[in-house]
Image (tube, rainbow, N blue to C red; front, side, top):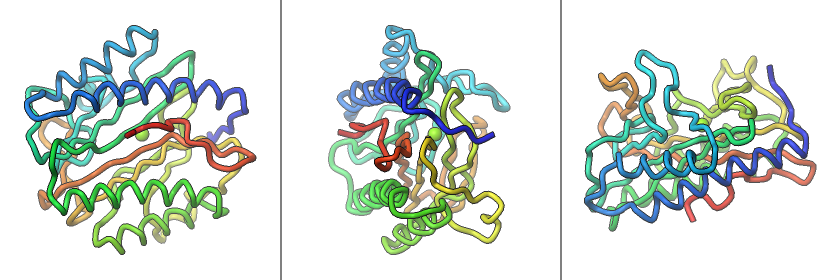
Length: 257
Ligand code: MG
């Protein structure tokens, strides 16, 4: 069921979202060649623990429960990468996604960071992913239905020469991390039945995943890590955004800064 949130509830969600932003700040300061992705994950776990927040990703059900507090996906990994012994290298791009529940309300946010100097393709891909997210948020202000926003996202990414992942989508968020509606980053024929109007009180986790090559993906044997089918790099940017009477409000404001 799609639930609309009150101003008070959106305020509570902002607090959870700002804790997610804080986790990202701590992690982004540590990102450098030689650090393991497991070390980055530990920082988020410690922070949520200290603040009495519940991590939303750890134990998330699947063929095997997700084992960590963050998803950390490097280079050709799209989303759902498992933190571990991999040491970041100069020139990597690293997508960090995390979420928590604080005082009963959820926040979710992802960002793709550069490790030192990255090549031109990865830099353009990061630009494209960030502008896809901005396009989506602006679209909430100017468009009436999500399908119109999704079409804008897809067209912008295509103009940049890249592709949008279709197998994974954003989601409504509230007391639960994954609520209705599904929030795709592309338009298609089958969209009609899933389309929704952009109404005050809607809170969405908007999360375009942009690939340098094909939009096709594969899942590794660990049952979680999603990689591009052609091995080309991928980026992921996600904000939790509330639609208010005044327009879209970015509850994860500050992410990536
Ligand atoms: Mg999400």
